[in-house]
Length: 204
Image (cartoon, rainbow, N blue to C red; front, top):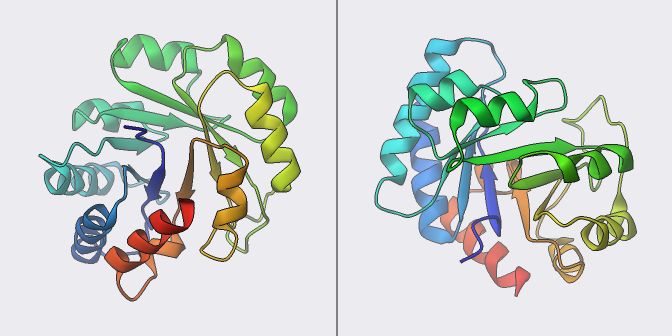
């Protein structure tokens, strides 16, 4: 199974009980990977949220990925960690988490995409495919052609992120990208399970 296909990134503004329900419903609807993101800098809260989601995911086969923080990933024994360009270097993160955990890296430019080929990572998050209101420091908008080019160029699995929703998902899927990462399309949906099912259907 392709674990990257429908990749849920959690909304750090949602209370932990809401998040718990959203993740459980989304996984029931077909989400294949979950990344817990916490941008507020409270490590204790991050660990608590990660442990809660780890419990939700137990027995589902869906990997738990921690955004940015290798220490949190190790603390909760997550399945992997996803790094940004300003986080811990991938080579050091790999030494710390070991050879069997998943390691993802965000790439925002052609140069970063090229440089990632020599790094000990398992997959790349390509952003942003389309500009979004939440991403104010956008470096590049790849668009569909840029995404298709990146898929052709990279030897690593690519996950597309940024402005992806039910309206453009079919076009995204046609590029051959391994998966899509979504936040609001699932987290803010009236029913996360139905939203995930519809997204899976659209991907074909």
